[in-house]
Length: 242
View 1 (cartoon, rainbow, N blue to C red):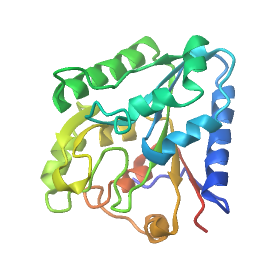
View 2 (cartoon, rainbow, N blue to C red; view 1 turned 30 degrees about the horizontal axis):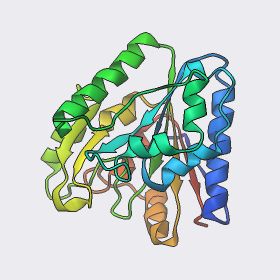
View 3 (cartoon, helix red, strand yellow; view 1 turned 30 degrees about the vertical axis):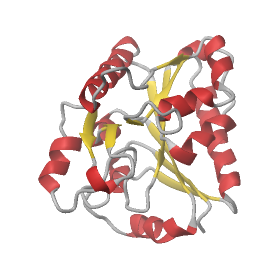
C-alpha cells in the first residue's frame, strides 16, 4: 500500500534539521488540546530531537518512551537510560509528564522486557483510546529502522518476528547484523496500525542514495525495513540531504 502522506523537509545542516524536527513535534503537541499523546523516540542521534521540543504546560497528558531498546545495563547503550539523562527529562517528570521505563532489570531477557513493554503500550492505548501515538524514527545505512533489522536471506523469519498481527513488540537476537544484537523493538504491525504520525530523521550523505531509492522505488520490508514508512499513516521526513 503506497502512502500518500509522506512529506520531505530538507535543510542545510543536520543541526538545523534536528531543530526543525523539534519544532514539528512541538506544533503537533500544541494542536492536541488536552488529547493524550504517547511520544516514542528512536535512539542514537534521533534522541537529540527531544531536546528541541517545547512541551506544553499540561505535561500530564504526555507519556514518553523509546521506540526500541538495547538489552544492556550500560547507561550509554540502553536507550531509555540515555533518555533519562537528557536535560529536559527531570523537569518533564516533575511537571507531571509520564514515561514507560524500558531499562533492563536484574534477570531480564529480551523476551521478558519485550513482554513488559508490550503490556505497557497496550495499557496506554486501553486507558487512552482516543490518544495519539507520535514517534521519531531514524534510518540505518543497512535500511533498518527502530530495532527492525533486514533479513533478505530469510523473509519468513522476518515476517514471524516483525509482522505478527498479534504482536506490538518483539525481542530477538540480531546476531552479527548490529553491534547491539539483543534487541527489543516495536513491530511492523505496530508501525503500520498504531502510529498516527512519524517524524523520520535522516542525516548524512552516506544515506543519500538510500533516501533517493526509497522515494523513487519500492522494496520488500525484509530487504530494507525502512519501506514500512510507505505503509504508515503519516510520515514527515526531516533531512540535511538535498
